[in-house]
Image 1 (cartoon, rainbow, N blue to C red):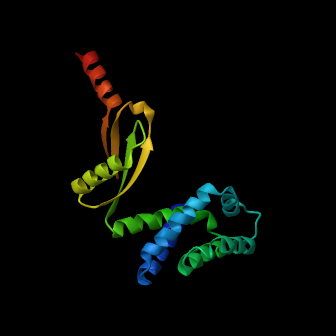
Image 2: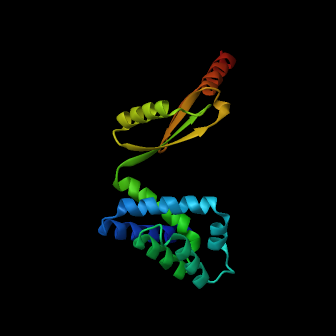
Image 3: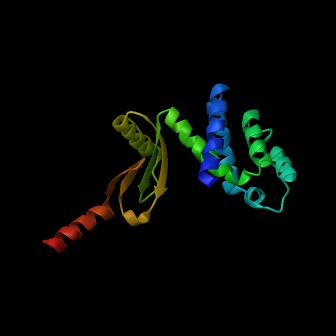
Length: 179
């Protein structure tokens, strides 16, 4: 069985369990926090990826780190995956869970790329505009890329709106070269 099938099956199981237990939002908060911990704490990455560390040691370590911070359902899920030697798929299962969550709540992912860091007011204005255009909730992330010179690039799901100075300069250059 390939990685995506494994991750999808576990994610769907967790999603259904959280939905039936009526704590979907709490489980999502748990998995977002766990994913952040995995990204930031090198020892957790090693724990997940190491074939040398025994399953029982991994289960103990996960319980020591997370049992007081997350819901029992989320902890049981991690324990199940670890016990089934599927802990390597935790991050991708969490990613699929998050996709299922956003789909069920009609939330779209949006990313704004700017040449400089956005202030809070500008970010909120842009978020409001995107919400009104797409008529759904938006989960907004921002990125800084000085190469765009100015303006911004908005990506909502698979649609991209390039309003950057760099792209406008390229358009002008192309029109001058083709004239």
